[in-house]
Amino acid sequence: MPEILCLREHPEWTEPAASWFHRQWSVPETAYRESIARCQAEPDGVVQWYLIPGGAGRIAAGLGCIENDFHPRRDLSPNLCALYVAPDWRGRGLARALLEHACRDLAARGVSDLYLLTDHTAFYERCGWSYLCPVTDNAGDRLRVYHRRST
Image (cartoon, rainbow, N blue to C red; front, top):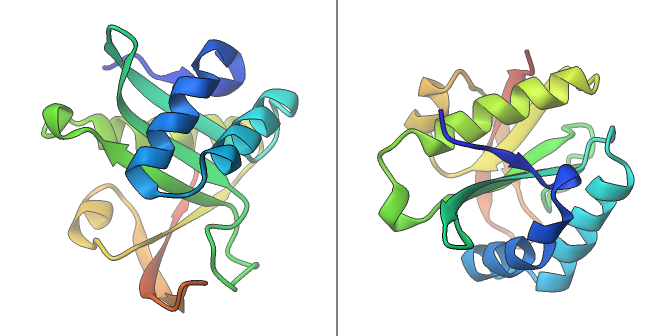
């Protein structure tokens, strides 16, 4: 099992994580910084960020949980988001480990249902997620919404 850090407990990773997530997803770095700061200010809240260190100050993989991942369905909340595994680290089960860790951690915080938007299908289904419905995100892209009980 890889070491998974919850950023609410590791403020020293705030800047590297905000920069890393920005490079992967092109969302403004300030948005990540503010969201990570929120998870640190509200450690029992829904907004959470996780990462797997890759050694030498690098990040191998990361994942967040936010209230809404840029879509109009406010009832489908909270959303896991920004799951990314660096190419050199793929094929080692890191994405699945992050998903499982986040589900357990959020369940401990009273979150019973989680959602995510993706255009990937088979991977999430193999990880216990169920297709729920289509949604058009704020950029106009049609994506699939998946659901999972957080246990």
